[in-house]
Length: 117
Image (cartoon, rainbow, N blue to C red; front, side, top):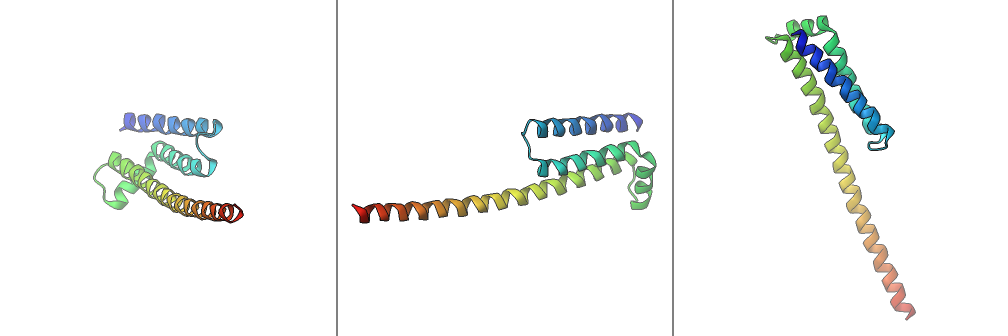
């Protein structure tokens, strides 16, 4: 169990560093990086707080402590993916509306050009 916690700690620290370097190089926007930083920080805290994992395992009736860790991490990342799906859907809708506005403006410009000719 301890080796699993150590591996989870290393992976969460790697994720933290990766997100911070990505923000620094402007590969990811700060508002989107906050979710990843919180998830990596939460995973780091869970991997270092064995009593919290043991309590959650007993409280929720999960048969094994490593399973509790993976269920918690999986749940957090599932929520993050859902959040990003909502953001992508909103951006897609905004792109469609923007394309329609551009098409309307092009139509008006062409009609003005035709009236001046």
